Image 1 (cartoon, rainbow, N blue to C red):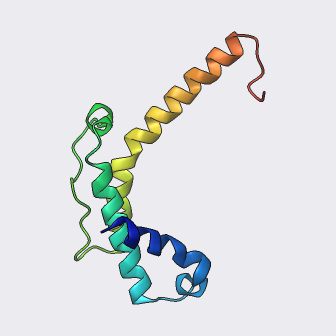
Image 2: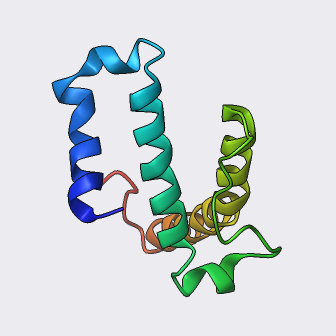
Image 3: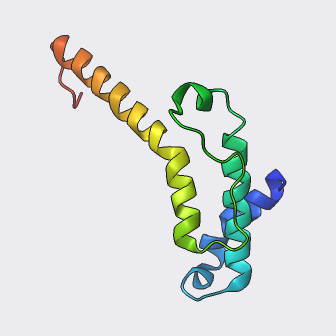
Length: 105
């Protein structure tokens, strides 16, 4: 998927919001293509290896999978990142509090 195709897909919600309220097979197909592309692109980042505690798929499997199964694949890949971000933001918050500054500044 090219950057232009991804960009075109990203404009759909503002240009054709009705597509997301109806069961439009074309919109679903384009959404799945964009999701697959981003998922696989993220898999090429080196940070994945340092964060992942377990193997996940290198590619997003779509054929024969329903929305829930696709979401579970994405969730498996993202969960370690969210845990890392929570930990790092907690550490940052503690550093700010310990420095005597307000977290809301």
